[in-house]
Each structure stands twice: as C-alpha cells, then as structure tokens.
Length: 257
Image 1 (cartoon, rainbow, N blue to C red):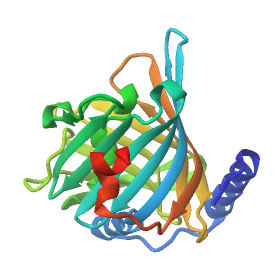
Image 2: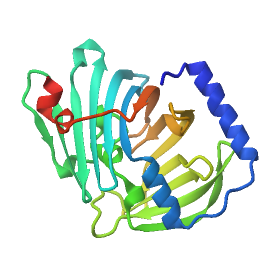
Image 3: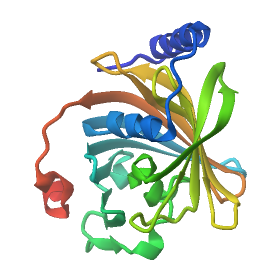
C-alpha cells in the first residue's frame, strides 16, 4: 500500500473528524482494551519509513529505513535496516523479545556484529530519541492494566490505559500510559515513566492512515526522550502486511545475504 502524503493526511483528518462525531462505543474493561490493542499489533509487516532526528542546535539527520516486523502474542522480532544515505546503507539493528526478555544485535558492514546488552536497551535506535526497548516492547501484553481516565487528543476522545510490568515482564519502565482511540484502536499518545514517577519518553501519533485491508494504523509519530532539545520523527511511506518471513530474515547472516 502506497500513501501519497497529501492524500494520506486528508484521509487521516477525515477519519478523525468522522469518528469524533460518532457516539462513544461501549466501555471496555482495561483487560479487554489491552487485549484488543495486543491483538491488532500482531502479524507480519514490511515497512518503509523516514527517520529524522533534530537537535536544539539546528542539526538534522535523516535516514530512510526498511523495517521487517514479526509479532505474536508471546514474541517480537524486528529488523531496522538503513537504505539511505549511502554512507550508512546496510547498517541494521536486530531486536528480539520473548517472555519479557529483550536482546539485539547491531550490524555495520565490514565490521563484527555487536551485541546489544540488557543494560543498553535504553540506548537510542540509530541514535534517535526512540530506544531499543521502545521498538520491541509490547506493554499491552502486560498483566497489570487499568483505565485511569479520559482525555481529548487531536479532537479524539481517548481512554487512558495504564500498563505496569509484573514479575514476568522485564522493562526499563515502571509504567506506561496510552491514550487510545476506542473507535479505531490506535494509540494517539504514549507516555513512559521511571520508577521515580518521572516522565522519560513521550510518543505522539501525528498521522493515522489505512492499510490495504482498510485497518487504521499509526503512520507518523514524534518522539521526545531524555535528551534535552532533541526530537525524532518517523514518517511512514509504505507498509505491506501479511508478508512471509523466515527465521533467517531476523539473523545477521540472513541480513548480510
């Protein structure tokens, strides 16, 4: 599915205005809402996106990425690979999470593969404001879920779902709050907090598009992290779902081929 920028924006705006005018759907429990969000995130996808990191000093760094994604109820496999610019082409990050534990690898052509340690999961993906943990973590699958309120985001009345990890979930965060559009089951904002209650990272979805099956999906998002005066934007250009992958597609050997 290809999305032209003006058409996609217009479509997203019209979707928001239509759903904002609709009657509220029947209220869901926290477990039902989290379960629905968990279910819609599962499956395979091949994504093209632009990553743009801007600093307070006015510098800007842009990467064109291809993302391979395989998510199930119990595990996640991801590959983020640089397509452009040429000096970084072929660089990649592999991430895997199962049973709450995360691991990963960094690939730079002509260099040994580097392991991402558990203590490094808070580091930025390609030095962006999105951490490795943010990319791979599925907090909707955590057992501790609670609806803690409602708030309007971008003219959409959202339910605020608070997720907390339990003993079976390994996370760098103590809790995550998601502002969820209950009509489209899309998070409009995500905030992640430390054990001291400090807001560590905020993700705002700035554009909602439709996939080839007419399902709503987050297309553009903005990330603010711990770094002062730094912001990262992801602008989705293409997504193909239901793609077939093999286990080798998520290994350094498979990527090198």
